[in-house]
Length: 381
Ligand SMILES: Cc1cc2nc3c(=O)[nH]c(=O)nc-3n(C[C@H](O)[C@H](O)[C@H](O)COP(=O)(O)OP(=O)(O)OC[C@H]3O[C@@H](n4cnc5c(N)ncnc54)[C@H](O)[C@@H]3O)c2cc1C
Image (cartoon, helix red, strand yellow):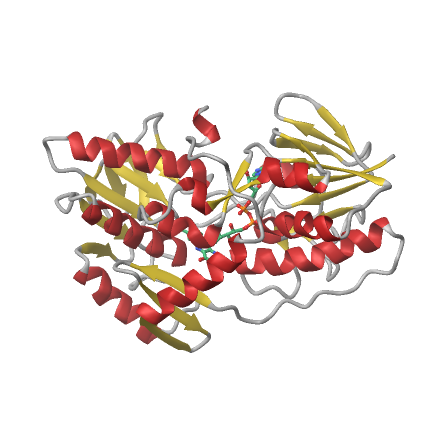
């Protein structure tokens, strides 16, 4: 039987799995290869870090979803693609032959910061690992006699939302003495196309929540308890979250797939690799000719188009082109159940924006099964 191999349980593949519930495929064996039985929904990540949701509420049970829609789930990370023999090789050496493969493995942080083997330095991806490390830090801070410090490296939308969520969690846990610092390479936070007035407003908002913003600096190295910035400053950091930049896994380019300069898989308007038409890619891992940026919203939308491309390919029908929207709605969670909305040049904030975000997230999560219990992340099992 022909095999479709889905590599990575990201937001685009969740769309594929959801469609398989309604439109089952009988003559193709479908396998999902993804290391964790869960996928944290990106929209609820800030609420998870802020302690407003449990891991169970913010996660989708990938293993159960696969079982429900007749897809085999393999708890492995892919580490190599042999395109000549159409085989994916897992980290444990197991081989998975396929006729078609689809990639939705996301992106990881840019590990350009020097760091040793210690628990101070935590990249924000994988989200489950980050969540575990963060919860362990909060418990450590609650038991510590000395005041500790949290530092977030990278002040894009992800890093800024993250530091606000961390502040919210610390204040909620009675740990207002733990300091929080955000380090960004621009004069103001929210680099990456946000309106100037919104960015100015974010500077005052951070100040109001006692978050220090260090502008025009980069973290260059992290040692136990400290972060070294370019320009010579050394800051205390008992927990250093890395939210700066993003990069794809090197095995993608190593496989011979055509990639852009950063190493993301170049796809055409059908989400097909431009070099290997039996490989598809969507979400952060892909470089689409018309997609202006990377976000969970784009990954979900691309997932709908990817689903159609995969169905058409399996059914030997002509493919339909996908045109991503030029801009997407950003809803940034703020402390005290508020949110900031940004749509191109327009922006606003308030409790209503938080309710709107909650409505969108709840509606999305209703489509998928959640893990049965609030067990710890699989990264520590
Ligand atoms: C704090 C924070 C808040 C954010 N908030 C938002 C938001 O509100 N809205 C928004 O649109 N975006 C947001 N983003 C951006 C968003 O997280 C990403 O753009 C989004 O997760 C990309 O989705 P994806 O499906 O491409 O990949 P991911 O969600 O990263 O999923 C990748 C999947 O692949 C699996 N995987 C990884 N490597 C392998 C491998 N080698 N083999 C097999 N499987 C693998 C992973 O386990 C995971 O299941 C936020 C980011 C951060 C850090």
